[in-house]
Length: 477
Image (cartoon, rainbow, N blue to C red; front, side, top):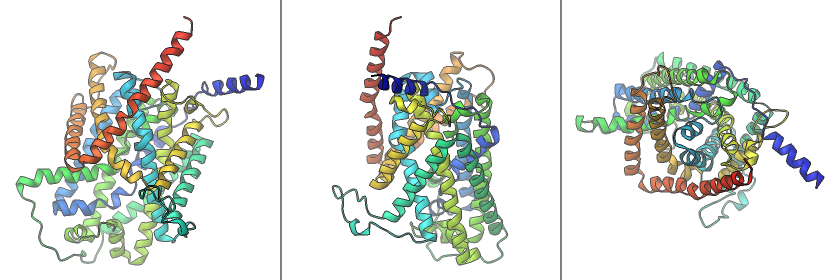
């Protein structure tokens, strides 16, 4: 009995250990940039070229998607003044609308958005390494073994094993110290920005004739121009996704009320400039018909590098994509567990998620459990299907974020002048509604499934709510 009581006491103490507030503004900016710059920037020019066939419209789509992301950043900047706690959007929704909506956001994030996104990024990283150094498949003998002819756990075992190793390695680094993880992010983000700038310079000053292709002329009429630009913006928007992740770490950021918004706004501004320049460079090297007719499995950035530097360019881009995805993976492994840590503090997630390592001062159980669920998703290979289903849910919560800012401002809970208020939350709300409608039309099955996954969290919420009420009743006033 004594042993158990000592263990319980030790674990209870771990739930009370505060996180270290040691992340500064420059690291915050690089965390935002590191999260955003993944593989999307090297791929999205191809479908956008097929949609628009006009350089100016493509650059406009990238700019508008960046501006809308910035309005999201302005909205979050307004909400950042509400709290110094970790949790980001989860915490802002909790303070604005109560526990149900905030729990459903955290539930959807753990189930799919965060862990599913990490699984997808880790898989792309491993694939990019595989394109440089072909990986052996040690479990190839069992590749045809399936669970319900749907899940093939041993297929592509080499890529899956490297993806799992990358998750375990980065999780371990981020358990040792948030500062170690953020320093690694600083280094990787700086390296990939240098690599991207080198590619931009080579593209902008490319002397040869742009590579072309023989295709039927695609005409974008004025009637369809608006819908074509919106569809292109949706492609661009995925490359901006993740700007809000830094908010999950508010409890470890110095002066979070000021540095969280500064990090997001500065990080997005930097990324907008990089995205515009690299897309301009791509279009200097290859014509739009050539980009538009690339095979759907081809990566536009790799083909551009091939034109500029031959096979050496392919190797350069493969390394750059590996670096970009590895850095993006590290950023999300740093940030997402902090939300689940905050949920556990509020008694709406398993208690162990709130434990802070007594030596390293990191939410180590939250990081470990995220790593386990992410690895399961990698082995199952279902992350692509699941992440497609949750797109609509993410934007439903962006609507709530915008409404929350308006509500808290009107209630006097947020004081002082806000950036672009009330324009920023209104734009975020309207764009999110529009994107949800488009997503429902284009992916009805995935959209319904995404809402279904989120609704599954409602009975789980009421389980925790009932449990908390019983505990409260048992504790004497």
